[in-house]
Amino acid sequence: MTAADRPTILVVDDERINRCVLADLFQNEYRVLLAKDGPTALRRAVDEKISLILLDASMPEMDGYEVLRRLTADERTRNIGVIFVTGQIEDEDEERGLLLGAVDYITKPIRPLLVRARVRNHLKLVHQREELERLSLQDALTGISNRRSFDHAFEQACRHIERSGVPFGLAMIDVDHFKYYNDRYGHGAGDEALRKVAHVLAAAARRPYDLVARYGGEEFVLLLSSGDNFIGMLEKIRAEVALLGIVHEASEVGHLTVSCGGVVASVESARKPADLLAQADNALYQVKKNGRNAVLVHDTSK
Image 1 (spheres, helix red, strand yellow):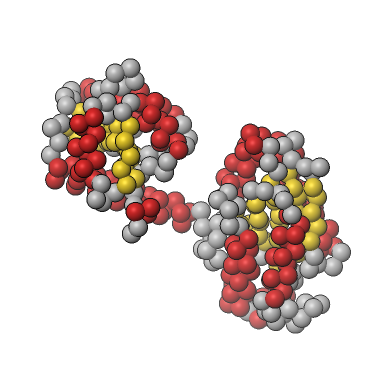
Image 2 (cartoon, rainbow, N blue to C red; image 1 turned 180 degrees about the vertical axis):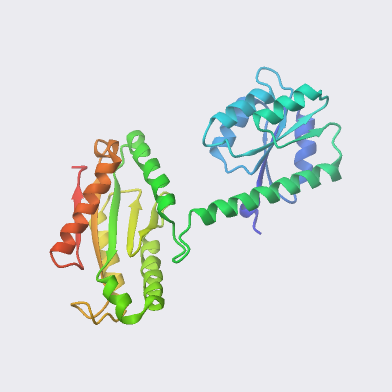
């Protein structure tokens, strides 16, 4: 595991010595970040991919309970595990923290072996939860994202364009005459063909906020964080699928092809996500009606 792949622990304490003790304890196993107060902790929790927070319960101005309350109120941070670190704890304080969402308590003075064991156990649970979440967002056949993952990413893209003003591209992509392909060559061959098409599509979604997903059956959806040269990108995808050379004797051209219908979203059009999907779907319908194996894009950003 490289340093970048290590789970990240955020240590939050207003006392420098306490931060250093915990940092020294974990720096060889994990990536450790430090924060000396609540506002700094909240910013880091949003800006970084945090696996676990070790949070001092008693800090001036904003105590640990208020930090935890704000973390759980924000959808970006509500799933981060929080372990309270405290010198004194009463039953009502422990109950308060657990009700707010804390996963555990560690008492001062720190006992290294016990603290390591508790942190290791919680990070193991975090890893298991993340793996289950990853699998729930992945299409089992092709390995790319599934419909659920796309729905979330599409919602985020529509929100982002209102802040950034940068148009994004949305395309519906359909494997041409796929029913005939399955009927002629069998479902095993059909599954393998879908995997190969998915691989071509995944290569086009390289930027951090790009996404390709299996939308259902032989239909895929592509979401690109920029609408620049969107039609050119779809033409490249169409050509690369054709170059796979997958024999399809029931097709007019003798090999497997795809049809692409897309839309470049503007700030205005992104306010109605369902209409955007309908426009992309309508473009795809027009391509299929006109003979398939082609690309059509509506640009609402101009």
